[in-house]
Length: 217
Image 1 (cartoon, rainbow, N blue to C red):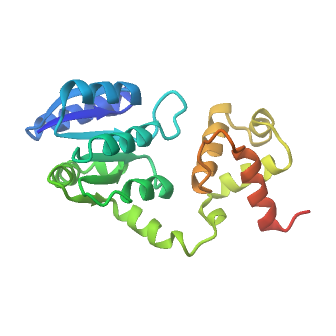
Image 2 (spheres, one colour):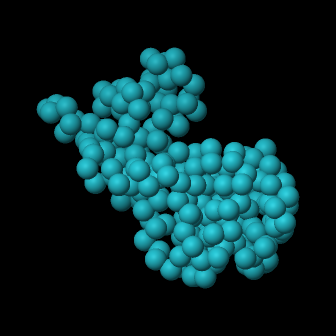
């Protein structure tokens, strides 16, 4: 099986290449961003693609958008998506494709090499591979308040956003690095189903959701 791999973490990327090789698969390209992924697929015509959800430059959903584009333009190309944690919106977007040959696994699952390889083989054969945690989250999705998905720290960050604090202000108050604050805010946007679109200001929408929940004026 010829595989194109997209993962921005050099350490994980090299590890996955070795895992694929050990399983008798050939990694024809291992790239670090979504644009390189699309070019590699055009060049190598692989049997399957494995891609991270979040990649440069914004580390939001570049990998997922590339995966969805590949499925639109190459409906028979099997795609297995990897994510750091459950992102219901991304999983739902991928799973609306009913043609088969898709998968969504948490990166923790990659630690079980046998399970990862079995999932990839299943996807390549036209089946579906879903992380059990993804299934559980999707089943709960329609029955929970989106704000309940936030961790205690994310709720704290959102509360400070509602007070009008900047990222730098939140960083100072919570004694966090700027990158940690940005990561928490991106997680808030993801868990509240607020995609990055030009016509919406996600920070404002997140704050409005918080204010509605707390019945603030």
